[in-house]
Image (tube, rainbow, N blue to C red; front, side, top):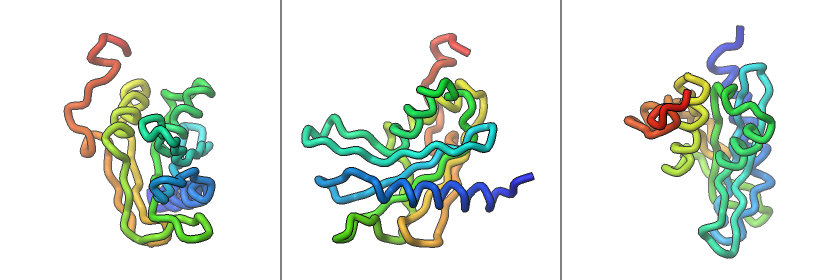
Length: 152
């Protein structure tokens, strides 16, 4: 049996590694996300900015789109997210925990409702040991999703 702290540490470490590949030349704010699936595998993503700002993608969305491309959206169990301002070498820095934005919370909700589970979300700063754990239902109460459209 894997402990909650083992899951947290694994997801945060994977998210930190992914964040080093963030493409954030405009905001200089690098974010990494790691998604744990029911079989124990982890899928990562980074933010991917675009000169046309509205076309930028968040790390959580990139990771979940990859999970979906594998046909595994229903298998999402937990997510780790880290982020911070990038230093001169492009490495995210900072200790304040970073959480998913509102759009990402809605995208995570899609996986939560499809998998019929309340997804745990671990948030951390890029280099800090301070962690926060939230359930999606706490971050996005009264969410709209597939169930509201009659889709199970």
